[in-house]
Image 1 (cartoon, rainbow, N blue to C red):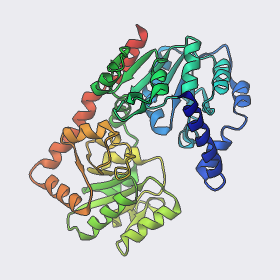
Image 2 (spheres, rainbow, N blue to C red; image 1 turned 90 degrees about the vertical axis):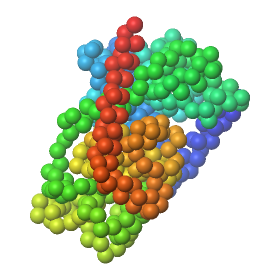
Image 3 (cartoon, rainbow, N blue to C red; image 1 turned 60 degrees about the horizontal axis):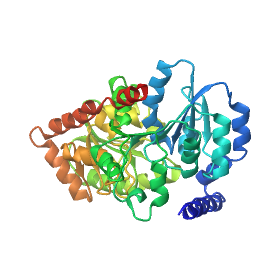
Image 4 (tube, rainbow, N blue to C red; image 1 turned 90 degrees about the horizontal axis):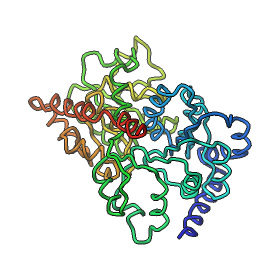
Length: 409
């Protein structure tokens, strides 16, 4: 079965190299790994006490960040090395002050794993949420390096729980301890006779809660909001944008609207403008204190402000729920937004929990959005559901401290 794993990894590598010929992100993925071991060797101080954190992308880094912050507070001499699988993580965080060493993860192979571990000599290793790389985990185990899964989530559909998932089951045996988000994950691992598990919750909740207490203020968004309620399409894709634009054109409700697409390229912004047709809108890059008050629709055409924009909004239609890749629902929930998203959210247990806590709605069509908004505006439904969203966050705080407590034992 390990042979099939090797073939799948090499097939992925070949596919990315081909894609790099015409795709900018794939090119970054390939180029970022050129001379990787030479770069690591030139930067690493082998006398450092290094903790290695591996994150697939930016979202997983934000999930691991609360733990990194507290570990460094507790140990001033600690150095943190972060590896990323994807360019969106590495390119956005490679210069962050919290990270002492930052690299792309070399492709998973026995030789690469041995060379990497020999070079960095980590005292502990932390894999965030979904990351499982056979040869790296095996090499860590061979060297008796404590290895932890942080904020893990397991589902029955994963290979670990299939009769043909022998290699993936073996990966699980290499972990020192699993810090999982929910009881369901613990039960699934227990069914494989794995007991080194703690249900500690989601460290992302600690992260978004902390930010919600003292968010960066956005003066232009403050002026845009005035005394109106705002519906935002956050990290949106075409499905969410089409539904929201259809709603805008047909609704007489007194809202303002923000569209913050996942992709802020000129091409995508132009597509949104076409959807809006003759409806008046303003792009954030062109906004100033005078013109921002003259529009009811604002398009966020840059990156970096979305998380703090949610403090001004009331209802958040989050992107990715039509393609099974739901974006962050915790950030808007932390500010008391009622959540809307498409029905493909089974891989995101926080979305399921927000639904069960009456803080979210599933949306498939414009009529669903109309019905949801009408329901929210009836009686005190909006206030109640906003409170439910904030309560979900506040009651979920504490995963980071729980993990630290276990690590200290």
